[in-house]
Picture 1 (spheres, rainbow, N blue to C red):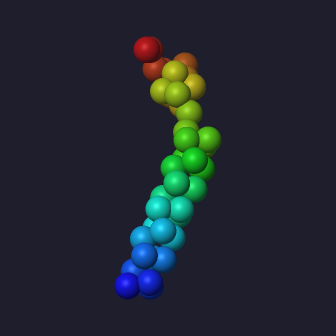
Picture 2 (picture 1 turned 90 degrees about the horizontal axis):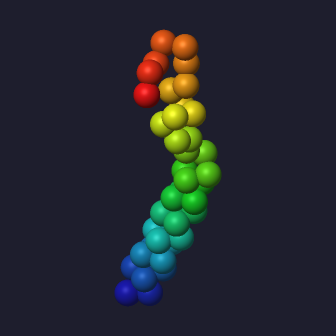
Length: 40
């Protein structure tokens, strides 16, 4: 049971770190697709 709880806690921590990293890297659509051929 202890190993299961540790695995759940580790999964939550890894998911939170991944979410924070992806939110930092993500760009708004206006910046990501801002080229001369795209009209938004």
